[in-house]
Structure formats: structure tokens, C-alpha cells
Length: 321
Image (cartoon, rainbow, N blue to C red; front, side, top):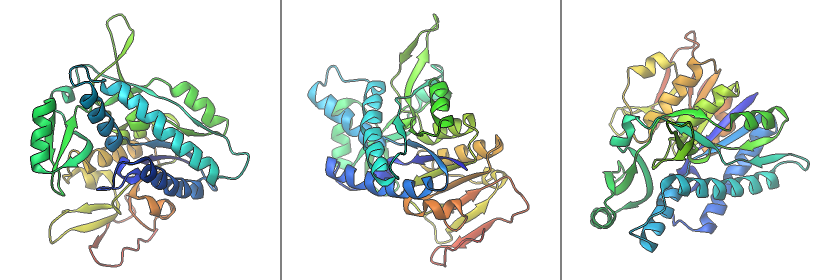
């Protein structure tokens, strides 16, 4: 089967972990081993997040040149190359000799009139204490939001992806059997001018939404969104929270999820299966194969003959296929 895997930025760099090259290498190596396990039986295309990394680079850039900071589209391209290189190298080390792999910088068109430009919601960069966040906001005039786990984090516009401009070359490589790493960080955000020419824009596209667009364009069987939580939870953070094992898009439509984290994954999963995908899975990196096999995480399918399965927190989280 053809699987598009969207690796969350926090799966590649753990929450609270120092943003060092060593930590990034270690986490990418762990991710590559999980991806290589899938790639032995399936064709895998990899997208990835860049929230922690692009935020850190923006902070460094703003500190070095506060009056002339580098724009987010350029920083996004830098992180796409950096993270893509690390994934490609570790994936090639984990896969059998002779496997072909390629990393592509990917431009993604967005609508310059998208209301998201007036409503920043995408968290990037480190989590600050209340005092640190207040100072950062004052220093750089950045929008900040409170994290569910405590502290403050910068938020930036996250417009919807309209089109993947590199989809032709990506499709050619995939059809040739190459393991492609693309659409990193949701892709490099660009807008079309009145003359038809493209230009970069100050935003970060949600990588799950772009991954869903990519999976649909490539006629993938499965969209797998891997993050640092084991599944989607009903009533998250309350005494009645339950792990959702299997569910349909219609059932998810009636629920509410946090806009900056789980909501884009739910929207992307539902869009993919409604467009013809067999399965959208959400869960932790180490459970990648188990999610595909229906033994872990959350599976979203159109098949209404399969009853919804929710599991109370603390109960055995084994999910029947």
C-alpha cells in the first residue's frame, strides 16, 4: 500500500527537550527506524512538521537582526532542507542497500485573502514561562497563546494549502519507486500575484493539511499522522476522557478539538477519507505499524459498518481490527 506519513514536529523534537543538533539527530534516527519498518512492506512518502525548529530559527534571526528579520517562508525552506536531510540520511541508513530516497523542497500555494492571516493560530518555537513570554512579546511584537500544558508560545498565521506546486516531480519520483521526503513544515507558503508570479508569504502551513492534500493527489491508501500522543481522545483533559480507537468522519464532526493542535489533524483525516482514502490514522511514532494494522492509535474510516470504539483512559488500549 501507498502511505503518506506526516511526522509531527514534536515527534522529532520532544516537548521540553533542548533544541540541539544532537537531540534532533537522536529523535530523527528513532523516527527513521519506525518509517523503515513500514517501508519494508509499503511505499512510504514522508512529510514532516517544523514548528519547534522554525520558531527557534525565527528567534535566532530576530535576535541577530531585530529590525530586519528573515521572513517565515525563507525560514521554512531552511528547516525543510535541514530536517529533510536528517530524515533522508537516517532513513537510508535504516533501509536495505539499493533503496532510493530523495528530499524535495516543496512550494505550496495559499490564498492571500485567507482569513488566517488576520487570526494567527499556529504555535511555533519554544514554550516560554509567563514572564519570558511577556518579554518576548514586547521585544518582537509577536502574538502569543497559552499552551494547554502551561506556558506561552508564539502563534503565526496558518492559511489553508490550495495547491502543491511541485506535485508533478513528486509524483514522477513516487511512481519510480523512490521514497520521497517532501512538503516539510507544510511546504513553503507562496501566493500568486496579479501577474501570475509566485512570492513567499509570512506564514506556516499546517503540515497535516498539506499531507492530506499530498496523499489525495498521490492516490495514497493511508494517511498516517504521527505525533507525541498515543491517539485522539474524547473529552481530553477531563475525568471522562476516553481514547478513540475507531470512528467515522461523521462522528468526529459532532466533536470539538483544540484549534492549534488536534483539530487540524481531525480535519485533515476526514478530508482524506472523504476524498477516497482507505484509512487515516493518528497516534504515536512508535506505534506506526500498529496503527496501520488497527492495533493502536485512532483509525478514521468511512466504513460505517464498523462500530465506533472508545476506550477509557487507563484501560487496556488494544484495538480490534
